[in-house]
Image 1 (cartoon, one colour):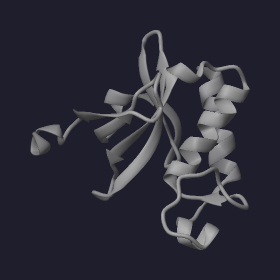
Image 2 (tube, rainbow, N blue to C red):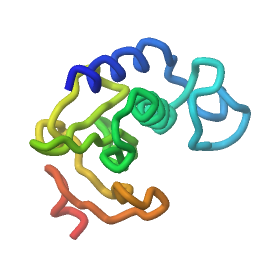
Image 3 (spheres, rainbow, N blue to C red):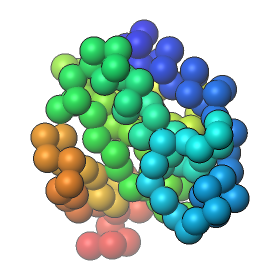
Image 4 (tube, rainbow, N blue to C red):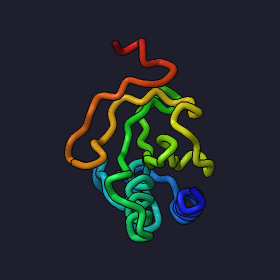
Amino acid sequence: MPLLRKVTRAVNLAVRSTEDSAASGNGDVWTLPVGGRGDCEDYALQKMKDLIDAGFPANRLALSVVIGPHDENHVVLIARMDDGDYVLDNLNNAVKPWRATPYTFLATQDFRAKSTWRVTLAGPRANEFS
């Protein structure tokens, strides 16, 4: 868990929150931060890269689309630990169990096959979508 906290804090401090159109000149692009700027999925991808580079198993990391604090789609990184799944978020430096976040999880990458996404529908507002 110390590695998760360290990477979360480091990326959250290093990257300035900017919409993709301002950072890259394109629409919504899922990529690593450009010029130290990016939006939520860019933070999540940077954290995934940094954790894998530090030796964290790639098959224990996945991106997840959630309903954010202002009813907008938001992307976080999920780290699967032996005692459960933890959220690494650019809006908060704390690493929390997914159930301890205010988010409703809509879809999550398959941990082993990153190109596959699964409907999640878990969290406080999940019943609104079922």
